[in-house]
Image 1 (cartoon, rainbow, N blue to C red):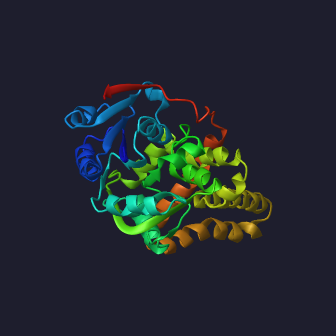
Image 2: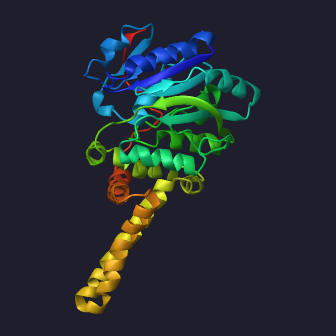
Image 3: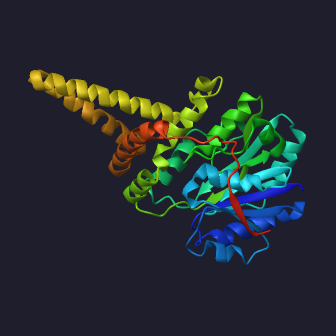
Length: 332
């Protein structure tokens, strides 16, 4: 089989129909398959998926739910020579596969290829910032890259060489972790200047989304992926490319500076202006960087939340990522 499109889902009833329909259209010219990997949905996602000609598998233990586990579950049952991972809130563009598959067939040194990702919902500060940052660094121009965030088409033989598709322990950054293994093995990744997916993302209010991600452990992802990567040879080199790791480091240094200046200001009030400047300066920087007071304040809070989550994630217990996930085949 040439192509498998895996769709990882958890409570995606609002978007899963369109995700499946666009995936079926994309897979059809190659005689490919569409596979749903469910992490224990309770909102009718499975009932909708059952209407379509797709294979459906589900985590046997919902407590193992994570972004990494959902991605690995989809990969475990894939039969294609090439594997595309799609989220349940995405729609794949029909023009992507006719560009991506020939590229991988004619470039045997590339393990994966992505395309342009359109963020449809930008009312939320996080997704608006993500879109602006992508445009600022030309993230979707054709070039060598260090990850395929928001999905990509992978050469299955390359993934097998790296051991597994996604680390089951990761609440986030599973695509960065995969890319670090592939690159360490000598493979390359790139993006083509063609549309790949439309991502609808969360529509929750910004701070509610941040709270939910903190409570769910999603914010622990930087710590989890840092620990996973550092355990491997040349891990420091791979981790140096993770911007969020350096963000956490900067926040921790800032915390230390604030603590030190607070101690000094208690004993000598002449240090109080320095304390105030140290506290306000990063907030003003982010306001200017993001282009608004609201977006700057949100980034400031988010940076601190991720830094807190880093320590919880780094200390979290791990299972071997090569352990097979227990799954139930709902529709084969």
